[in-house]
Length: 236
Image (cartoon, rainbow, N blue to C red; front, side, top):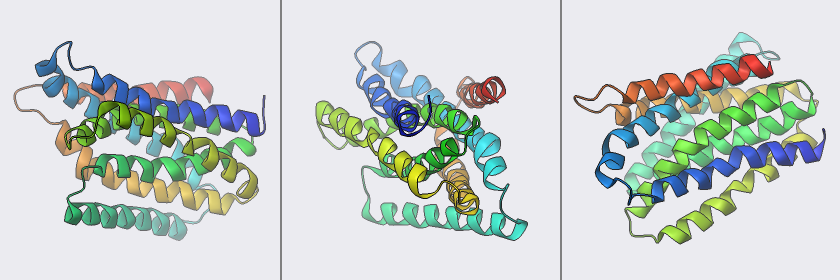
């Protein structure tokens, strides 16, 4: 299976974990106190590990193939500055959807890169789809809880998340049709996303993952990275 159908299926897989993460966050009646504390921090750390896996195993290696050192440094720097600017903007407006915005800010360029990578063949597209799915699960979880704290009904959030997941196929098909055959452009998009993700991990995710007098949350980061590594080894 290849071509547009493969792109649609891969990006649907990557985006479907956004509403799945929201659904898991909505199930609080089982053990609210535990979910609020240690498990929430474990999920945050898992997302950070998956994001680092995406950067280290796919985005930087694949993105730097067609670019020189100067271009690599430029695009990663621009990505980190763009995410910093977005972070400052959300902070000034005290938005209850900062996690959601950050999630979409890395999901969209990654889906574009996924479509282009899949068009060029190989396993990079499949590995990237797996890593995007891993990172979207905890990001959907955290975004749901953040938006829900502002009073938005759970059902409306889950419906919105399901619709947002459809951005994946749209961006993937755009990458497939317009970016395939342009490795420098694909590399720039991947490195831009990598720079933004690194900023996001150390500005937002890593500080939230720490929980005083609890030692299991950091294991979530290891598990997230390890799953990404295993996927890359198996599929690559």
